[in-house]
Length: 304
Ligand code: CP
Ligand code: NVA
Image (cartoon, rainbow, N blue to C red; front, side, top):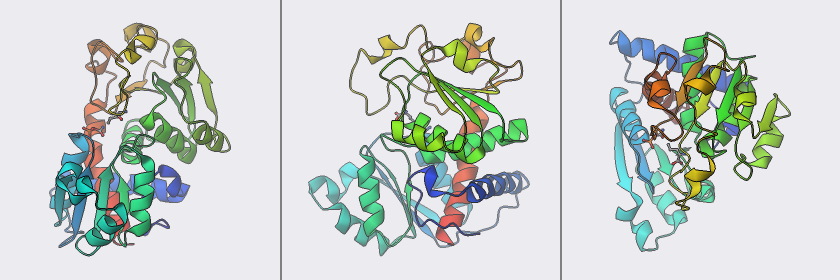
C-alpha cells in the first residue's frame, strides 16, 4: 500500500481512497495486535520524533507503534537539539535523513514542518502544529468507523474553539463526506481557507449557537479552550458557560450519539465529568486508536 504524498502535514495530503484505506488498515492492525499476531512490518526502521511542545499520547503512541512493528523511535526535545542554538531546519532535515527512515515533529509554526519536509529525504509527519493535527483525526475517524460502522452521511458537531484539531476535523469530514456543524464564539472560528475548501466536498455549517450545531448529531466533539500555543489567560472566559459540553447540551444530539475529545481535557471547562466519564464517551478508545492509526501511517509512508 502506497500513498501519493511523501509526507503527512495535513489530511488534505491524502486522497479519499487513501484516507479510507488507512482507516481500514488501522482496524486490521488493531485486530492483529489483540490476537498477538502483529507482524514486524517496520523491522530495523527508525523514527525520529522532535517535540517543541509537550505531549503524552502522541509521543507514547508513536514510540510504542515503532517498537511493536519491530522498529525503533528516538525522542528529541527541540531544546536539546542544535536547532536551539541556531542550526537551520534545512541542515537538521538533511542530517536526520541520513540516519532515520521517518521524522515526526510537533511544532508551533506550521511553516516549520513545510520547511522540514522540503529538505528531508525521508517522510515527515505532523504530530501537531498550531494549525493542524492530522494524526489525531485519523484516530478519530477510525473510532467513528468502529462505533458507527460507517462514515459517509453522519453528522459531527464541533463545540468550542475553532482550533488546530478543528481544522483537521474539517479536512477529515470532507474526505469522509460527513456533515459538520461548528459552534464557536465570534472570533474563534476555524481557518477560513480550510472551511472554504471543505465546503466543495461536504456540508460545513458555522454558527455561534451550540444547541443548533449539536441538533441530531451522531458525534459530538470538543477540545480544550486553551491550546498550547494560546497565550491569553482570559481566553476561557469567552467560552464558558455557553460552549461547555454538558449533559443538558448532549440531550440535543441523537440518543446514540458518541462524545469525543482528543485529550488532554479540562473537566469542568470544555466538558463536564458527567459527559467525558459517561456512557456516550469514547475518549479512551479514541486515545488507544492513535497507536493503530499511526502504525498504519508509518507503514504506508515508510514503505512508499
Ligand atoms: N491528543 C494529543 O495529541 O495528545 P498529546 O498532546 O498528549 O500528545
Ligand atoms: N488543541 C490542543 C490539542 C492538544 C492535543 C493544543 O494544540 O494544545
